Image 1: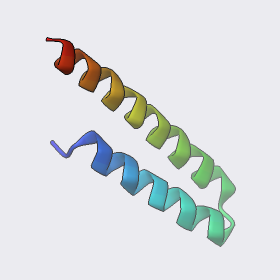
Image 2: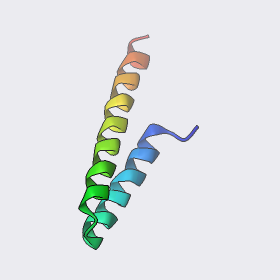
Image 3: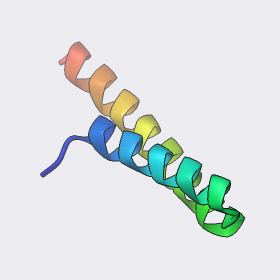
Length: 51
């Protein structure tokens, strides 16, 4: 399973490329996915740090 930060960076790059090319719907969706991946990563990192 790929790491969450790697996937988040991939979606951010995809969003930037889509934004530059004018596909704002895909860019917005990619940023939303990246945001949720980062949130999940932070939650899991805090839980693993506490345990």
